[in-house]
Length: 217
Image 1 (cartoon, rainbow, N blue to C red):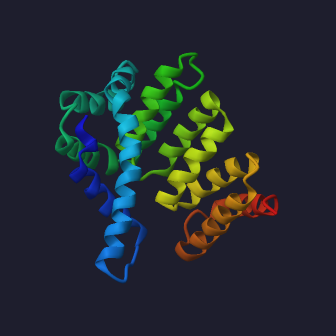
Image 2 (cartoon, rainbow, N blue to C red):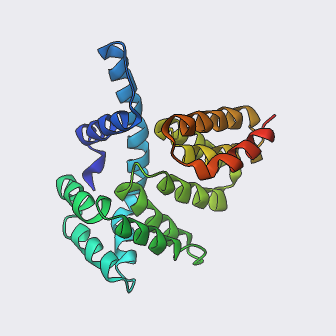
């Protein structure tokens, strides 16, 4: 899939900056931030696109009508970024039920005994839901199981910085703390707590974050 095209990644980076509500004092500062996000998104999509179509084919084998219908639309236009955007908007992003079904479908492949299949279906989440923290949590969990906690911690730290989402910050901090990187974990916990206080989202995470913070020293 040609999603890694520089202009397309630039569009995604702008959307991400808008979602984060970032403010800049000048255009150079904004451009520097965008270029950094483009690099991060490029790293994600370059890895994900390799397995995207195969992951769709695996999901298409499931006996789930909504998943099959959406997957078949995607498989009909595997190289069209414009079609991907249309399908994301109409069949995925505007339908929370569809999004939930995709995560459940991918979860059904976990511990299937075939790490390649797991990687392929998890990569579908990264392409379809690049701004949902759960996509990165799923992928980091897979990395942890396959490559160890240090690799998962590195992945978490990189993409937690890009998304700045309390849920991802919590899972990243937990992984970093268990990997002995307590100072980095503490920073993520504090940021997550501050974000929750500002946005009033993810209140259910407060006890876990506060408990984790006490273990970060």
